[in-house]
Image (cartoon, rainbow, N blue to C red):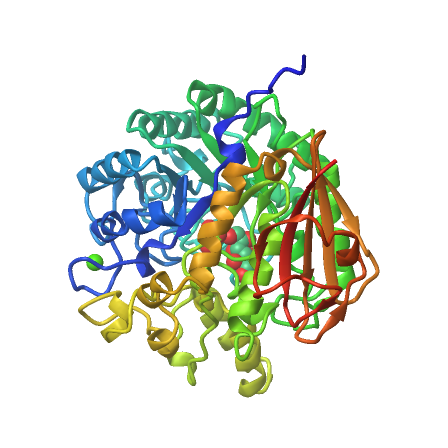
Length: 543
Ligand code: TEU
Ligand code: CA
């Protein structure tokens, strides 16, 4: 007899990402907070969510919206208190929802006590918590650049030394070579585990083992040694979901990150499919059309490579990416159809799906007419840098409309009332004016809405094991409009078939599948071989 394999719980989980600043304000200061999240837990339970990843809420000067932490073991007053956090964990648990904390371990804020000490002198016990180098003949140690513009080195005159920062000047890199740093971090993680958190998302984790002297940022030689040590000392002592953010992941090292033996993380969160619509070798702001056939090849490659050997995170949106319906769908005439199509394409694959707040409503990008309405440090630095270099402001704005992180950071659209029901005060960033049409209240009433469609998708995954186990095979590889694949188990075969374009598309495949059971479909009536704009369907049959 075939033995049923016991799967870790997170293999059929759906994760929802909250960007706390923009989710729900409870006290009218215009900033989302923990009590706001608690008040929306029933909404998340209704959507069918198993775990919520919340972007950082620790104490922070907010230079990079919380990704610059000044105290890992306390909550920023702007979001609430530690006891609010404990209440959130308990309230979520009542609804079978686990809370995933965002751990930023590559760097701290320059206002963290460790860095304040580190700056005091070369013999201070905290000095070696960070990465310091002397200048070279009065110049920077080398020409490395920071992700948010400018050099990766900052001079501290009192010490006559430079510290290394891969992100903003206010985000000094931690020195993972120092065992004391690693011990402090592990103790902090254990402290959060004691509080009952359900997992961790690890920010830019592929960058912790940097070696600036060799200009190595990600995938440093000691990376996996550090990760295995951290996992052994912390995560493996609980039943957690852990997800490593790794822009530098490839299918080979992903098998290490997400090794089924649990030696590192549950899964890897990688971006190869999210950087295809930019000019080769340039920055994300240098726009290019999406090479559709390549996108299919890329996703298929990851599906194949990690089958039985690792685990994928499935996502199209997060707080650093533009809204997917505006990016690869159509946020005008076919907004609903294309949002559902993208969800179908994604949720049919093997891995753990992530829904980013508002994605389930088909929320769109925003276009503020002036740069002064933007808040994101990366966007503001880019504007200054490019306009300074002589780019035309309207061209820079075009890049910002397409790719700014603020597209994802406008407030969650709850209802058609003032400020979309996000706050009774003045929101820290403006609400997208389309909230009168696109909002949760409206969509929950409407069985044909994007929300209702997501709600069905999250349930399908629980009902049909083929979503978790099925082997992936790409079909119609060269087709310029259709994205089609099967998922196959011993018993069943499932077909996921979508038209990625706003034009009708021929799909003979659907004739062969005409007697199969329809699991979900974004149009009324049968799916025929003549697919409608952005049509999407999932079919199931016995083998
Ligand atoms: O992002 C990692 C990262 O590399 C991004 O900064 C990326 O380069 C950029 O967003 C592309 O537009 C993580 C967090 O998700 C991000 O919000 C933080 O700003 C960053 O780390 C630093 O902690
Ligand atoms: Ca608030």
